[in-house]
Image (tube, rainbow, N blue to C red; front, side, top):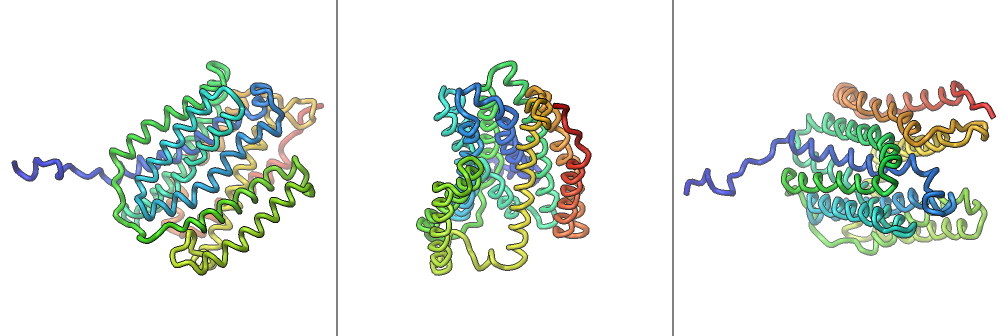
Length: 366
């Protein structure tokens, strides 16, 4: 048989196809995160729990994301990036199904925790882009990833209201599962396994210490306002964070193949970029959560607008659409002026929008 007809000669997917599939992971992550946000004010009534308990639907996802992302990223470097993407997608789909069929608040929290593994898709997908694409196309590929995040946000917020009003709250998790399955298949069929590997052993001790520190820190921050910043549980969590980090940092500096290369992370460009990303991500997520709840709070509060779930979701669409519109522009800014200028420009636009909102928003009449 001629070699051209053998299975091994099957054409490799084009860089554009690979980029498109990887970028869709951004849509899935944004969709998974935003579908529950418009329903947060309603979940206490739906599930028969307190508002504090209902906040675990966000907290559980944040905690699992914080733990899964560094572990999955390191595992991707060692065992295969496509393999880890498939694993994360499978866990996310399983979590969506658990949340949809569990029938209780506990199973819903477990499902949301499993969904948090999807957050690790973005750094792994960007890493595959770096391995597979020419350097000159990386800026536009990352910009496309940002655009798909905006598409997911723009779709998820109003879609949650429509699904809730038409099919019930469980339908939002069935939609997450339905979105994850075709993407999983696309990754298997289109994305090649990266040949770039980091050989060695997995840093289990470093992973355990870092995971414990992140869980303690995030739990203290997310529950501090409810439990009281001076309460014993919160203070113990902060203390546990300090102790675990005090053990983790010298261990990572000593071990041959650390979970996180702290020497590289401490370099000024890397450190400043990570800090900027952390602060910008915090401001965007906090704005999304606070705005959605304010739109649905009763008018009698003096600052709520008492909108239904669908209308509140539609009010949030412009922010998602702005991400779609400006993502290509940011890629162009990166190519011409560099990433630092693009980051500073985006931060200044965010600051202007948030400050303008403070002075331009008219409180609802009490």
